[in-house]
Amino acid sequence: MVEVPAKIYVTNLAKRAREAARPLALLSSGIKARALAAMAERVSVEAAAILEANRQDVEAIGTHLEQGSDKDSVKAAVDRVRLTSEAIRGMADRMTQIAELPDPVGEVTRMWRQPNDMQVSRVRVPIGVIGIVSDSGPIVTTEAVALCLKSGNVCVVRGGPEWNRSGSLIATILREAAEQAGVPTGAITFIERPEREAAIELLRQSKFLDAIVPRGSAGLRQTVMEQSRLPVLCHDLGVCRVYVDADADLPLAQNIVVNSKVQLPSASNAADTLLVHQSIARPLVPALVRRLLDEFKVEVRGCPKTITLTGSQSLTGYQAVKEATDEDWSRQFLSKTIAIKLVKDMDEALDHMAKYGPGHTDTIVTRDYARAMRFVQEADSSAVLVNASTRMHDGALLGLGGEIGISTTRLHARGPLGLEELTCQKYVVLGTGQLRQPHPVPVTYEDAIMLKRPS
Figure 1: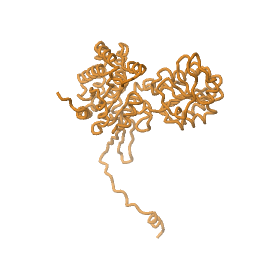
Figure 2: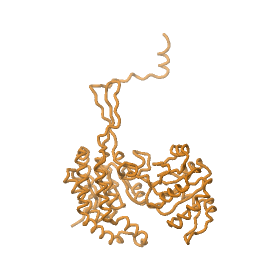
Figure 3: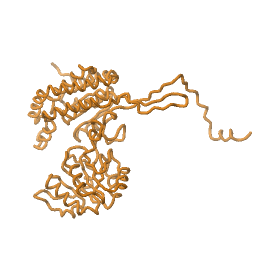
Figure 4: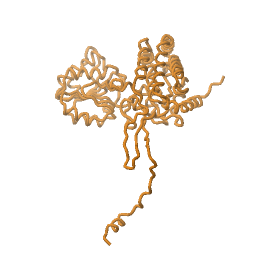
């Protein structure tokens, strides 16, 4: 049997997904909530089968990596794909939580009445059909599917080929449970072909899809940005920075920096740059650098002043602080690497941040309220925090109930993309027979002067 070409296969799936957009948008909040609850229950019931399929994925993962990949790459891929019983319970719990969130569809965000008695309002509606390209593993992808369903959006998902077995099983479970609960066929669509061409074809479906969301590595996000013919709804490239002000609490500052960098170094909201007011550098920086190098094995790159202050000596056998290059200040490391710069004041810190953007997340550590408020106003990133880790820039932790990703672009939405950000707004106008009248014929400036002159 001849296999259908990837282009035809993906186009057919996208077309069927577009046909589901209108009935899904009209689906009641109750049906969507029941569908998500049914999906969560089915995932829990099928946990053993999912774990077995996932075990096979983990065993075969080496065959999906590039020739010559090192052990660290294999380990990273395994960590990304491997599921546990606890992780599957977490997947089910997240879908249950999303089911209980308020439905954004139909919310009236503003209403007013015109002088001619027309009532005008703005109402939230689904975006439509959203493509999701992910290499982040089943947990992240399942949450994205749940958020799309809750917000009334059809989703077309292409997951990583390295978790094809468990991904296919989870796809079947979610799709069947949703459709049995009343969700239209095609509203949750998975592309199960593993070849790269299938992912590229999804990025070209401008006739049937409305937007693309990349979830995963920097390489994946870059590919999506370069190849997509659709608006990219979530683009989280950008630098995360911590600025420690002159009046900072030093133990608090050290804990915030460590958490921002090492809690999950591969996350897009992990700290990349540390800016330190030079007046507190001596009591803070040497001890902090020692802790990063010795306890957490973080690679530290510093400005000349940082290197001088830390003595540029290796600690317990680990490599010494390296001199930072100009490119390091604008780099999103996504690894155990951080760049440290001493600044003379907040003005220099803010100038540095403006120069080496775009900003993903910026946080200030200070006890001075006025300087904190100035930082909040002038720091230009998708989230600005005061006395908190950059890792707190997360939809669930900010009370949004989850996110499909974090956007650092200025269009549509900026920051975590939760349920509200997965909608757009349309105007609804209630009239009583109002008709538009012709505008008066425009006159030139000279004519207007003549009209004003007394006869």
